[in-house]
Length: 87
Image (cartoon, rainbow, N blue to C red; front, side):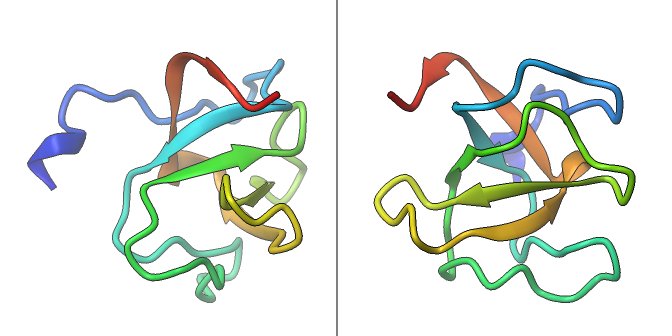
């Protein structure tokens, strides 16, 4: 995963995330209890639905092309795609 080097994972106290695109930093994103998030295999980018991580350290996200496929991903498995957002 050398293409992810230099990217900074989201912080647990980060805000203003709703509508932002995030790069997935791991091969298989998981939720807070380490279960697979249920995103498509090989997904690289997701849209964040929450403004900040919840108390369980997860964010609701969906693939950019499928807003009906909402799932939870642990915040530190994501990094913001700078200056991009889903409109």
